[in-house]
Amino acid sequence: MSRVGKTPIPVPESVKVNVEGNTVTVEGSKGKLTFNFHPDIKVKVKDREVRVERPSDRAFHKALHGTTAAIIRNMIKGVTEGFTKVLEVQGLGYRVSLKGDTLELTVGYSNPVKYKVPPDVKVEVKGNEIHIHGIDKQKVGQVAAEIRAIKKPDPYKGKGIRYKGEILKLKPGKAAGKK
Picture 1 (cartoon, one colour):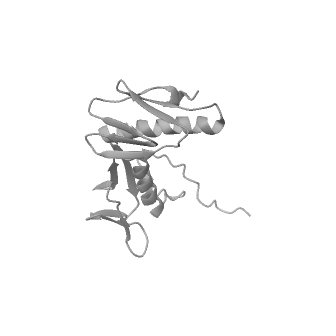
Picture 2: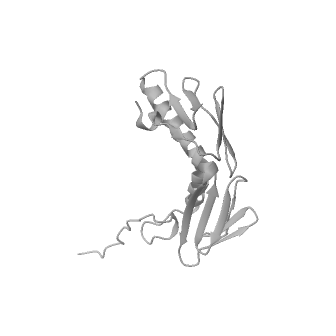
Picture 3: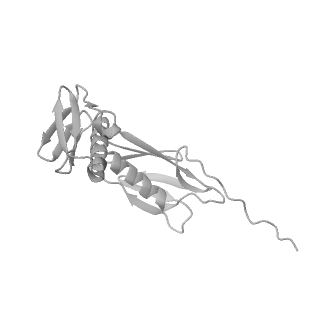
């Protein structure tokens, strides 16, 4: 069995988990999330814990088993603690500002790049860092990836937008030619 899937998921006292048909709804202090799981998988809530079960040992069911359990675990964590991703903007003259729900990035292009932030994700700018907060792990990661894709780190100088703590291996520059 899947180690991720077979371990029961504990539900804190402040969280309500409801299963109706193929839909799991998790409600907590930070908000409410809904997930539609595959009809072959069974999700049961009993004694303040969620159990995910699969009908067979086929590879497809094994994959669904672990994935469904991981998504439900992330939903519970999201409505209690939330998720955060931090991006760093590095480069001479590179700036970031937040105007309403639009992130304005000056990152070496002729005009500033504007990025519209989705309504269920909160973005803060602190100096050269962009903090992305939300209750849905997938949406927080997607927004962070889209912002990073605006100006990926340059492999030669390291300028661009990167995740905080991301280590870049810089390439050596052009070597002097020998005759």
